[in-house]
Image 1: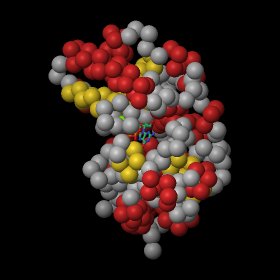
Image 2: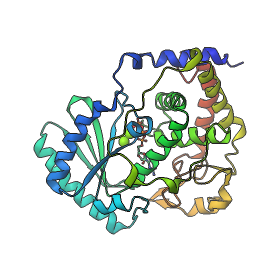
Image 3: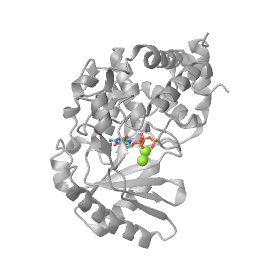
Image 4: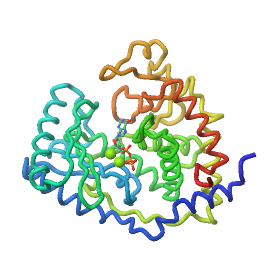
Length: 333
Ligand code: GTP
Ligand code: MG
Ligand code: MG
């Protein structure tokens, strides 16, 4: 028997009690924003800087979370619903700009660790800065800004749902399912898509067409969205967490269905041609693409955010979800 909702909710609230004494205001990362803007301007004064990722999605900055930045040209912003180019040429140009940017960052902040990552699907520079704020910088890609704005628009419909998302993210990192830890396979972004899909299936949120999100209408520094403590001593939160686990363990048909925010209702693997056959053939940067646990990216064409979930990792996911009911997302032990 899993514990009662009230017990689960209270346990999760306790795990986040440090947030009550923390300044969660997004102004805490504005300093980092200014520093990066200065470097970007030195390379190309016409480029604009946007913040995305968790700070944008939640409208708060949690200590320890990295900050995601992207440098966009004026045209990228004006054509704010445009598709991102996925060609090698585009990737090369992005890497070139980021190379120059990395040089400037190193010159201006010689004690920082600046790493250029080229082998990933998207070229990125990883900066481990002073003051405990780490950040990633990409170039000329709107999709991160758009997917973060989409997730935020969903959480704005029901701001307390951010607790479910934060609880799931914390748990995924601690049990090693999150791609940010060694052996993990689903990014925080992927877990957020799962959270919102679950809420949509339950009718707790209204569907938003991804095409509605326009970068030209998104603020470069995300506005603060105060995070109130869960209502009713966490009873609803506990209920939601147990129901989320129930949904993915027993209702979501992982063999045939896809977690998707691209269209309302059910999306099948068949529909996307994410089949056994495609799985046998598909490769990305030489690595196998799995269609075991499917999460459709709302903006990238034909991209499974769950592509690294092998059959073994899918079994881990199920086992950890099963345990999470008893441990209140690993907060009670
Ligand atoms: P934390 O950094 O863990 O606090 O969470 P986060 O909400 O910032 O999520 P994460 O760092 O995983 O993702 C930030 C952004 O990176 C997302 O908005 C996506 O644009 C991008 N991203 C992360 N993972 C993936 C992925 O698997 N596929 C794609 N297409 N984009 C991803
Ligand atoms: Mg992040
Ligand atoms: Mg990041």
